[in-house]
Image (tube, rainbow, N blue to C red):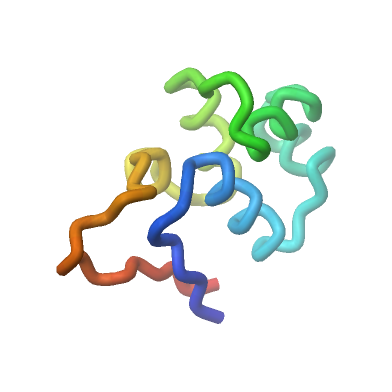
Length: 86
C-alpha cells in the first residue's frame, strides 16, 4: 500500500503511519515508551513534540524521524509527492 505523506503535519503523519501499521495508540505507546495521552496530543497537533519524542515514536514505527517531522504543509509547487510503502 502506498501512503501519500505530502502535505501533512508531523502529527497527522504519525497517526496515518500508526494506523497503516495496524497499531492502536496504546500499542505505539508501549513500543515507544511515550504516554498514550502524549501521542494523542501529538497526533492532534497539540503542543509540539520534542526531538526525543519523535525519535522514539518514529523509531517504534521503523522510520527515521528526519523523514517525517518536517512541516511541509506548504510544499513547493514542483515538489513531488512522497510516499511510503506499507
